[in-house]
Length: 294
Ligand SMILES: *[C@@H]1O[C@H](CO)[C@@H](O)[C@H](O)[C@H]1NC(C)=O
Image (cartoon, rainbow, N blue to C red):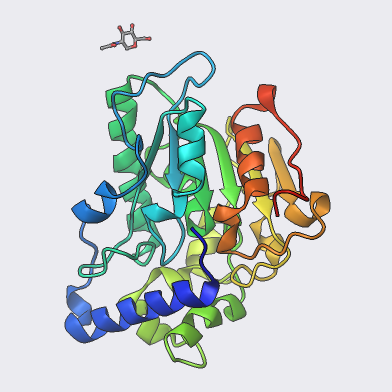
């Protein structure tokens, strides 16, 4: 599936505005009920508790989408992982009532709790103690919060961030969302009423200070990040990197100079997909062919 940032954000904007006009702000906290229609039309083989874990792929892989996005973010990557024999799970988190197509809007702590519930159910039903996590954008920090502040310690083996908003963004990143909403300058009171996650992602927020307090990485977790220099949402793009032991930080354009991927298209890039596969199973790592896979 191809989409542009403007098409995604204008869909997001209309949905946010719809919500804003339809629901009083005070009634907005998220509904945890999955949107049946959306989760159903997701990729074949996703969220299959009958999937058999193997010696090659011993842990379930949980894929966590980004802000204003949903489970459909994985329509390119998930089928490939499933075909390679991974047991792949994904959710749409942080939804507001009446906006089932958009997640990642709720307070980030609440979304991390949703991930915790989702992951704990998988651990129990798949009878394992650890998962691997692949997260895009805000989806690349939920597991970090889960590990540090909820009950996730020891439950994540590998963590792969795709343009993960590890150190937040300057206001210019938030302005992308604001413009899509027809607001020229980001308005915190407005955004806090309809999408509290947005201002939590500002680099100077209390949330970001808490997320990174005591270090960017979690003990025992093998972290990796892939980042694009054309990221228009996480600015500067270096804010996607993590510092610490056990981290691989990769810049997409370091290997593939011509890649023009920006924040949203990262989850459709075959080069990024190859990075994810290499991180999940380094024993079968391959070099991505930049020329055939921009
Ligand atoms: C769960 O895993 C443990 C340890 O690998 C095993 O001993 C046990 O039989 C498993 N339980 C089920 C229900 O498969």
